[in-house]
Image 1: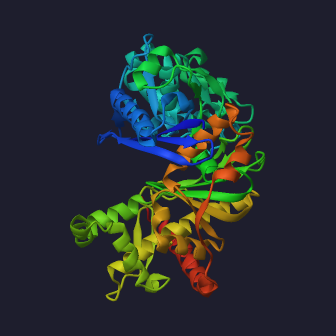
Image 2 (image 1 turned 90 degrees about the vertical axis):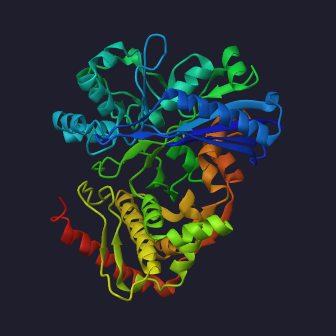
Image 3 (image 1 turned 180 degrees about the vertical axis):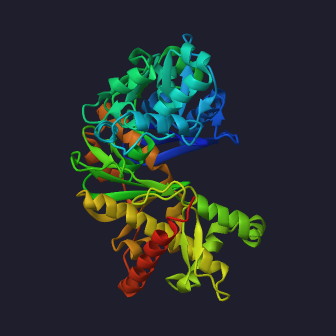
Length: 503
């Protein structure tokens, strides 16, 4: 049997998964690294930390699978689309890797947004403006603050692009990854030359662009020895993580949406063509499925649950240490001991601003309606309900643009919570389906892309339909419909009332 190695380069960890041609996961390895966060907004890490984690994950996943390396026919990649690596003429890093959530480029983002016409930005990059998250802003910030680094850079790469280079000796990226850079024309699927010229980025210092899932070539002999792979292994460019996760969740056609409740709450909806009436409020990107597009709005996510656990759940954390029962599982039990609607307690989950439709970066988290009768279970339920409403509002914005939705696939750590999944189904009014191996969907997605390019499977759609399995389905409870409509309306009214107050 043939095997594919899927590599997902995440925010603080790299995961490798060995996947057979039967679609089963045979081995995995996750290797973590730490980011350094500074008070001035920088979030960064040494490139060597990524290299060490990559090496451990590749070798560890193969060892865990118990397969010979000559059975690994190809390697596929998934990663964030905004984690920047600046490399000199010797392909050595000139500075630390700049993580996707780094905010050092806030002023540069505002400057670029003001310089270009809003309609041009929407038409070219699918956003209503340029943001600090975008690599174009980060590159301009490096140019302004450390011009020597900018002048000596000979390759502006993303973290996935760098590892494609390490394995093949060539720099390539795919258009799904490039579509979140701020200098990529998503309609014509090429670099936006006006933006490059304005910032001073030479196109030859950027990776070559190919469709997602393109097989780049064979691994170099040096890389095969370094990472413990067979010298005949084929290397695939893959795609960006949210797109790969969508494929790995079976989100391959209109009518299906997927949501990932990680540190951010992200929803992905596949669309066949661009909507000419889009205003840019709902980010539009190139899909990981070649030729298609996707909506990808996002807001603060499960990081709020982590905040509550770390701040108010010392008892549950202690029990976890003593018995092994996860603190989040105990929090779920507290939620299930309370009634839907949290007895009038509403939570606005705006820890890092609000998502669509408001897009208010000054919005802050709020508990509204606290009384002496409310317990920790109510407070946790209010978080879950607030995030589910935020998810609904994002999906409603997509529906106004013509997106179809009959079900939603749930991925990530949040999908483990039975209480939260049921809350989402009740508030959204559509089935919520939890994917088997939901925390490996990005690895599965990039493996499917690599396997199709290698001739193992006929198409992305066929492989996803065949191998993505549903672990559990949560149907909306009609008894809660009227109550949650009331909660939803209150949430919207409280948000409207507070928007002028947020500073």
